[in-house]
Image (cartoon, rainbow, N blue to C red; front, side):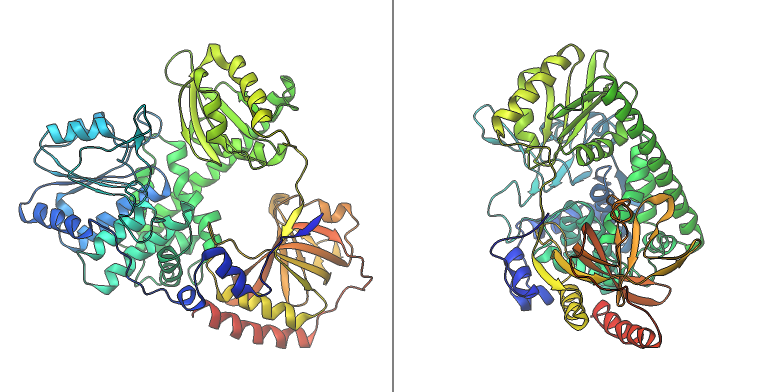
Length: 586
């Protein structure tokens, strides 16, 4: 069922303004200088370390943001001629876990500068150890600090803390990811425009991958980062090589980064204890392109391994659900011995999406008798709040509304599982596993081709879209399907490789879906359909066109024969290419 969202403006510009709180001029070109307290002090600390020839340690994280943080700092300090005195250290996912540890501090020499990026705000113990060792410490983070028993924030004893989320009023905008903050620090040290754009490209990848709000300065970072990163003269050679191997060497969108590039950068860290270092070396690489492509090929290979492993274990876990008769549980709390820690979150997300209920997936921790895992939400359930109700059974937990991590003693598993079911229904008495109606923002008549294309063009004019500024959801009614030639003759659709999705063509654009690809065939593959989804600019083999990615599909009540293509269609394609190219390079 398709339902229109209430209170939606009638224009795309109005809708985007409503979502972001930004006016049209700011949306198109945000040139405001956003204040962040501590930037000048950060500059002075780094310059002092360089003058005194002290070593600089950069401690990041094993996710895309933490990897890009390290790359921004390394590329920036390399441009300043200080690379030989810099060490970038990322945590080892399985043996160390998130954030800077006391074990890592033991590796560092005293009388040096430690900069934590994308972590550190809650690392009171390790930072105290660093200070006791004689290190100068700068914390650059965007997470919240720990609190004491009275709920009062506890900050680490660092020489400087830059964290707009943790220190209220310390910045005009608090939505930066770690790499965005690292980029702003480097802007204080570097005057070379080309180098700054290179760092901007790295920050853009992290901003998209970390799902921070795409509003205000984050929009500028992503908008210009996407524009420049396909130019080898600006992007690091490593980033350009990865984009090239993924066929994004001429044009890349925020969706391409989020669903293709980011998983490739995350893959080694999910497979190997120190795998994130591999991704960091690629993103910060500025050498020969041939060498960079060999490094990027390893990323793609690892991502394929990660996908195969995820598919294999998803199948095993679905079998486990049936074996233990957990199908009706809300949420599902599943323990599967041997499940790889690096893919637990991915699989929990898949189960939650498929089963329409939160999923808490647990495997064995290194410590005997302890279970460790990840949780992913569904149906509007706030996971952190839900897990907090089961705190008596947990050793540790943390996270936010959509995702969380936890550990508990194996002996408490059944009691915890029952508590989660009882507490979910108490917190959300109206919770249901039925699929919610598909909500859309604007309705378009597919028979009015010019109107549809005008709206598509306006949607792209206000891109990029993401967290805090979702792409407008359009209800496309009465869309006539254009048959295409397949191996079996003419057909109204074709499946993507391994039936991963479905592709349907209209006269002026294509439609694609990765959700329930069998549904169209199941309703008889009608020649006129209604779709709900969002439009993207698609580039392939030198041509731009619009691609409508849909999540909802129904047979249209309007009886119309399938449209036909011909000479006029080719002329229209040339006109669309010119328009789309102008939008893409604006």
